[in-house]
Amino acid sequence: MAAPTANLRVAADSATERIQPTILSRLAPLRVVAITIVNLGIFFLIWEMVARSGWVNPLLLPKASAMFSATYEAFADGTMWPHVRHSLTNFTVGMVISAAIGIPLGLLLGASRTVDTILSPYMWTMASLPRIALIPLLILLLGFGQKMQLTIIVLSAVFPIAINCWAGVKTVDPSLLRAGAVFGAGTFTQYRKIVLPFTLPFVISGINQGIARGLVGMLVGELLGGGGEGLGRMLALAADRFQTPLLYGVLILLAVMSVSFVQIMRWVERKAAPWREVRA
Image (cartoon, rainbow, N blue to C red; front, side):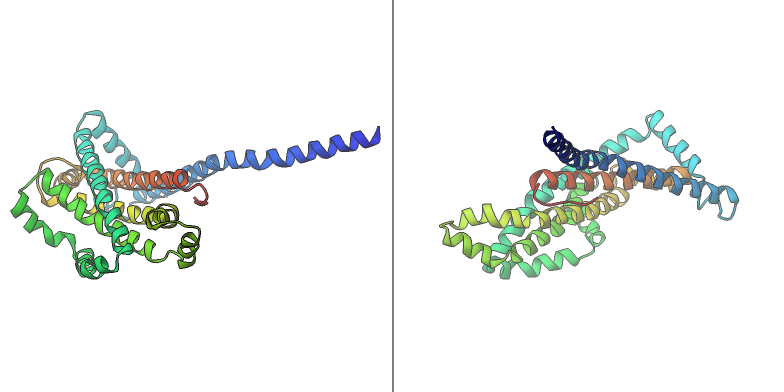
């Protein structure tokens, strides 16, 4: 009876070893959430203590509790919602347009040396040009309002996306393409099976950079382009009225928007490329 008992013990130990990594992998997101909550809690606690100490002028650094209170009141009385909807709508539409233009353009630039030679000077020029310099021209062409704001978001976000896709195609290992050709894969099949999966991390990186640039373009458009709505408009109003707690609240809200969009893109990458490990 000793041998069957030993076999059962070994099987139980093996099952336990298999279960433990599964449990740990399921608890990993909770660990990240817990660390983030504690980290942010300490940050805002230090902020509150510094503001209450009187070392800094309250006009420059209000209490964190006052910031949260002012932001909550702006949402509760309905002041904030139209501005949030306006900015989110413009930003989302602008990013979708930027991705729809930038990804195919970048892949085309990487695939064709002729297209690369023709368009690369314009790409690098527009990528390095400060977007704020385009505002007077865009106002002249499109006037004040949503069209101008959408255009500046697209012009801010499309070039990082295209350039990253372009770089991704350029860095594909030629041996992979040769191997695909040996097994009879045509150009379209090589692009679908080799180039696109290899380029996917560059696409995600480009979109993340486009998110950061697009947010800047969104704020510039709302601050300078008129329209009367948007988080940029809220920033301007809070500054004009010396409502520093609300101004900081809008800045925190913009940071939350940026991080949320980046996390969504990381989730998309995990689903689209499960063979890649995306670390938190």
